[in-house]
Image (cartoon, rainbow, N blue to C red; front, side, top):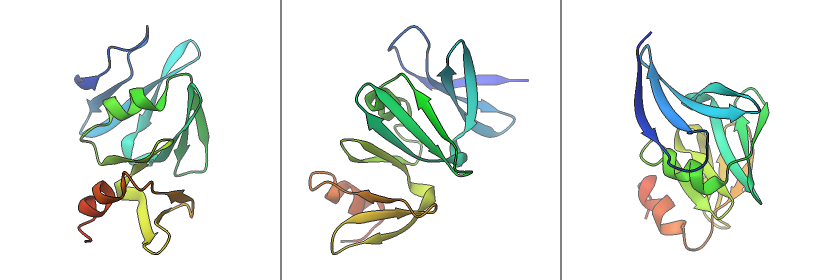
Length: 130
């Protein structure tokens, strides 16, 4: 197996990083005493709750990480993820629709994520809607 480190963060004892393994990109997430490997395409969104991050997966599972959303935002920069709110980082490949009148992103699992006023332009630029 060939693992190439693409981007990792200097935060904390365990490095959260993206690795390329056999042509697939994985996020290595610390899970208690071990590192858990999650396909990037399986992550719908990440939600910051105080000093924890909830990682919502396409199969409905929710992982809890003791790292902040800021750490994941840093690591996932440039990997089709966009911070749309202080507490939400979404996978743009899992974006199903958006409600332009009240600015909600609708994800493929039917979660509605509020898009903050400050992040609205970034979101609209990313989906090429003006």
